Length: 221
Picture 1: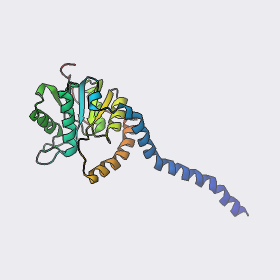
Picture 2: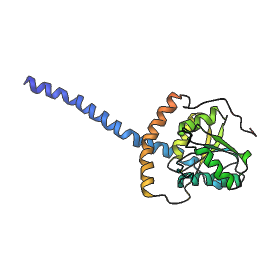
Picture 3: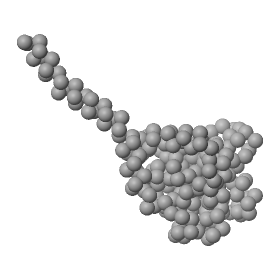
């Protein structure tokens, strides 16, 4: 009888552990859905974007031969369209330049210049190794207080959340100009779940970006 009583007393503890485990498993998906709903109203068609001084263009993969990946090309093309329509004055091209033979911002700027955007409208950010770094540096290095964010729809809620928590009032424009390979879409969308959890950690601690430096005042600011 005593043994049975002890076994019965274990059930509430086991139940609590199961509930806690289920909560931990569910949290990333609940968090993702909340962020997507919260920032959906801030994602606008390009034609509805209010005039802004700066568009922040988030980097993505560049091929070894210098070509922009499909997603990155669409981001830059979308930013160029915003500039040509007079919606923004400057394009802040932010991406990874963590090695000598890999330079996302330089390739983004070269592409934009080849499409007719003048050099004075383009600003590279060589320290944008990830979304948090891009947003942090935009605020603390380049002094950006409001901006249009340009990236794919799957990435925009996280970018808007991160920039907003770092003091940048932002709206977003989705740069989905074509269908992407299903494998690429599945990979980035699955990775986005973990990235959103890390974004929450990032904005709670608000550590400086991995690469900092002297402030750079954007002309016209």
